[in-house]
Image 1 (spheres, rainbow, N blue to C red):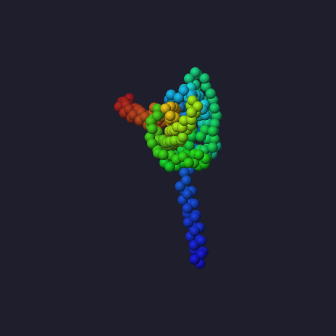
Image 2 (cartoon, helix red, strand yellow):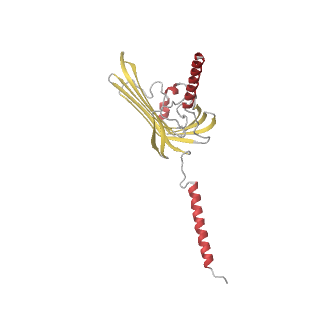
Image 3 (cartoon, rainbow, N blue to C red):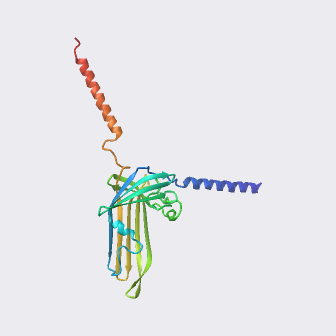
Length: 259
């Protein structure tokens, strides 16, 4: 009898723990619709070095040169399938030319070629960006208000720092140094869309110092555009005008003599 009771208790505890884990898991929700678009500007790329052998863009980062030549980017939602979002991105370069790219991201698993461009809507502090892969180890640090051209937005912020040892071969000498990396992502909490990104890298090798920084932020979107007069306000104004007009008309009608 005791054995049955113990087994029943263990099963109950196991089932209860499963319920708790399931209920506490953050549901992944797409926060955008087909046709939504987001424009990014304020693009800044900075690089400097006193190392005579250093070059821009640094090895392994050819995309930085393209970003440095970009004036603005327009990202629009093309299709949504469950937790998959397909985007089209138009990059407008400083010389007037443009480049169109297509990509997608699964805001649940983090798979796809547009990782970090979008996450689940309405995530909270300590929620992971995604449920698998590298994104499953990254957690929202804070939810903070940020101001953009369309107004103040509640954003989910992820800050990451990293330090590692590097080796450079300079003038036939092997010199050891240290590299530092600072990354910030801000996503609009209600849509999960990336609204701001900054990256900074510092390399210290002997007497040589190389710094690199890149940042961009959202400048416009059709999702957050607020009309000068909201629909309900316009209807209320029309109703007030009609009420006043009817009252004036009735007053004049009562004052008109009957012949």
